[in-house]
Length: 376
Image (cartoon, rainbow, N blue to C red):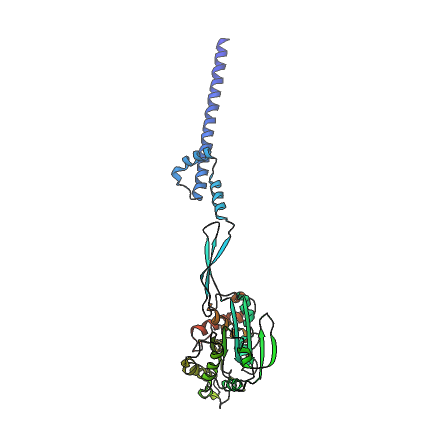
């Protein structure tokens, strides 16, 4: 009996020993797997080298700070609800873009952004070409963030420098004035040049010749007279020359007796007169190269959509925007591709691409026609 009891105790001890060994092995195996898992997670987060994985495990157990908790803390730090404070780095001026800096008051994040001059009051003493070129300028300025906009166009069909000077001398009330300072164009008949110059606070005053005389040297005899009179009345205003475009091939006005019927010859004649007479006079602060932009757009696949059927005046759907956007970039100093107009949806995608390209090339190369990339 005693022998049987002893054998039974030995058997129980053997079973217990065998079971305990398996339990230890299982625990060791589980621990080993746990270390490997932690090692992979830590390496994914680039927080420590793999050879220190066992140390990280024990640190994690004691601090309750797992790698995922660390990542969450980093994300919380990067998700600052920024509150930016605006400061001016470079004040915007006419013809020169400004720069503002925005710095978060809660963290160190900051960035810079360009901005246009905040006020543009412009008077055009011109004709239908001036009206064409400036008609969309208010809307573009407004979209770009210009705060105060006032645009007035003094209009007489086909008016030349000689006619402007005659009207100045005699105070003739022959102009129709189109004006936009609130988003809507108004019209006032029977105005004199003096009645508009009397306002005095124009930021920019622009004038031009008639289209037919713009490329003829004998059409500039009264240039200095007109310029001097304007400056005498508004000495603090910038005086800007509006360089226009030549007639389009096929226009009723582009004949063998007028610039040999060659649109490129006509435009080159306009450029020559601008350089040799207008700029050489020293009377003007700048020249806006609208003519170059229009001629550039004509080299594109939309060349027949730049003008009305007369091949002279600009089309409202396309030509107006090319001209007005040239004016905007010239007045503010902003690059063609650096503005909201680049994504404004004001015109079709093809028209927008060609406008941006044409204006950019005109500003960079105002004395020549630049071939468009958009030909197909």
